[in-house]
Length: 269
Image (tube, rainbow, N blue to C red; front, side, top):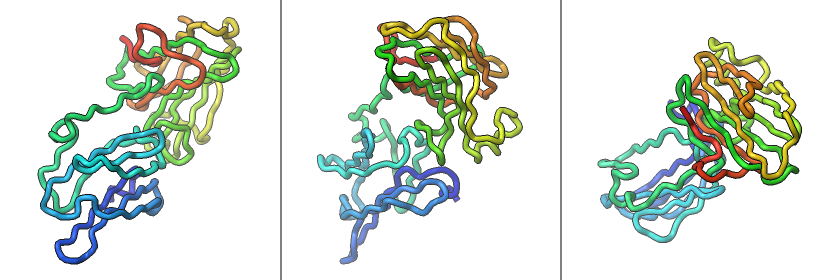
């Protein structure tokens, strides 16, 4: 039943044989509503049952790098959706004493990779807090995009939601929203969704054209019923949205982090 909802970004199935049968490892993934795809079969890297197994999965730019025990060799497996979408990890079968992360002694020496400065995971966003987006313009031939995501890190037709996108050009800011029908149906009582999956509106002219070296300062303030959006301390847009519907903020385009900030987008009180 678990497979009926959501995506399976990575599935590893180990087959052990104590006789002369075949031992193998199959790796696959399953986008929602489809059969398992991209199945790869390998020799079982452990070989025998009854011994300790450690699996370490590194996330690279477009693939998982999978290590077993303390081995230096790895399996490279391309992923089909952003790995940041992972909400749950499940282990089942004839295995006991399962531990994750720092609870596993062999894994504790590895440090998790941090998200890059242009991606921020949103935690504990409450009324009165705000998402501060601040950075320096580096060039003028690309748009600056501020994407608010739920369940994804990509503008995708089939998985996840781009809750809100602010697009900054040299002359104006516009706002777009895109929703997935499954989530729409769950959130209809909130009256924040329309029948269309794609909505763009709220075009606002900038007080002055962007310049290279200029500091952009935007605030997305969480109030009781909506988000108030400010550009250089002037309110320019409001958007009705529950706090929990923002999981990540990604800023792309010619905007770099400035000294004194860890991220381009940060949660502030």
